[in-house]
Image (cartoon, rainbow, N blue to C red):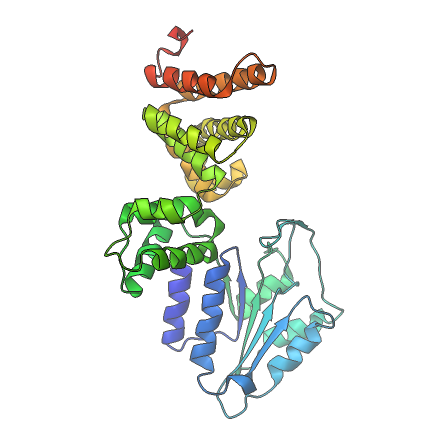
Length: 361
């Protein structure tokens, strides 16, 4: 969250670049940043000096953006021009909004030179902000030109610890209190979807517990929707540290929620496989900060997998994965029932250490 705090501090000191590019997947902080600029630059004349443009809208061209940016402010020192869904910086990847594949594109409409000309000498009375949720191509000349003449800010997803602190501060700001374990449970359940989703869950919790001195983990469990993946995390967490009863309770809860056994096995297998891969990559010298990219998962999932690997050990993880694979085949052929089979596997996993896997029949 340092990038956001740094941006806020710059605004408060009056250090404002003429051009910004906001990119990255943390949409909530992007919106908060835009609100900060509005409040700071346009305290009393927003209607006259604010233009918000849809970059993917019909007729939106670079020439239109430049023309608005070159207008002089009316009865104020600054104008603010915001271009949302700016399409000129896209690279290959997946859209953070839709998840669809995004091909590299260049909606320059033949006026790229006009863009460069403006960036070389931007209007000192306008703050121009480009916003995108899609992957950006840092090699593009336009990207580098904004880096040179203004500021590029990557709104990265927050780390789990940062989200926990954010939740605690949100409650504190509202005159309420949430226990750290409750905040952690809330983040584990919903943090992967970003602060926008977490904000909504915080508001829901505040409404539910409006008369309580402190929100507890039990309150979170009653109000917050724990998704399938989070339940799987919990089952594996409990299994690898030997909390058999809690792991089995998690399995039964998934069945109560009508999750198909085959789907539960698939998700459990995926998590054990990620744990094995995470530990192997770190042993090979992969920095932990690059783990998510190498595994192709969210940072939260990568850190969870590595933590589970360190608590369990590679042999126990491989045993669990092999047993789940055999169980899946037996269940599909009608030779085993899901619940007793998974219970037996978790009991065996709980009985063994990393060195005596082969003693289990």
